[in-house]
Image (cartoon, rainbow, N blue to C red; front, side, top):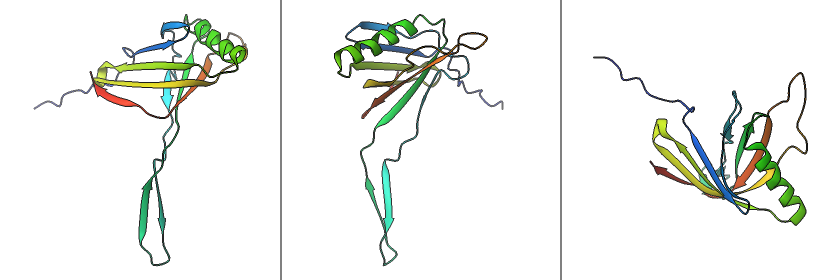
Length: 143
């Protein structure tokens, strides 16, 4: 019997965001590093002098890093959101929906843009730009 090949492609991922600037369908992700979430430490443990371990849940901030090619149509929209954040001196709430059809999973959360490039980097060619978003909760749902 042949093993079924499991699909892990990210090429058909879909990211949509909604903010005060309207809807943004992400496109033009970086070729090597489209988006990634940092691991969290949601449980902390300690051992008492008696050698017994205790564990407790700790609320955490979650991070999503997204990288876009300099030619991405999404890039000017995110830079406009960064400018709005600076001009208003107020974080802009962004609603996210990330769909990964390969694993039939959808992630829904609200975040704020916390890190962005003030200008793009130029080498032989323009370099990809990275944006960081942070959030406290995420719903993981089947598609």
